[in-house]
Image 1: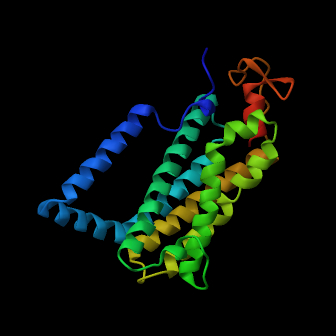
Image 2 (image 1 turned 135 degrees about the vertical axis):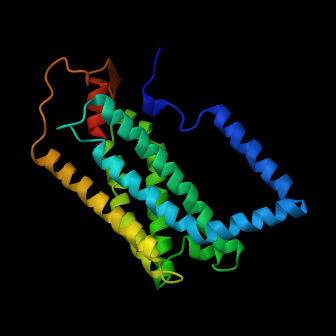
Length: 240
């Protein structure tokens, strides 16, 4: 029996094994002099660029998340692709985010408490953004539980914090640390433009939604949720 995409694990078992093997190989390689030098270069690269890459990937996640609900132009296949891009970019962005504060802590540029405890100033904005993004990631992983428990409103309430975390992260990236390079400022402006266009598209869909004809490809086999028989499309709509 085929299950819904949201019920599948975020990563397949083989991917977890590959990641574990890669982490072990890095630890073993770092014990050698050439490996230690390479690890130092990687740490230096991440110290400069992990935060930027994280913000760009998170912006892509926000844009694709907004586009995934568009029904005026996109068909079901396109929306499924947008959802896949949304999840992949969120995973990449959060990975770079973890790398960002790890290299800052290991390099002595930040205290461990500054990762989650907000302080006054630009660094405190980064802690606020991380806390909010963490809520989004955790509730995103638990999305099927919210759907099966018939509490989609609670999932939306937590997941919408991404729209608060994203501008906070933009402000943190432009004000914390050294002055941002021109290409960094340009990339942030492009992120703002992309999110603004996606939000405008989402607003058009909300104001003038496209009617879906009976028997359209969006309908899928029914399932029982909280004692009521609902379609997969209705469950997905409830979480938007």
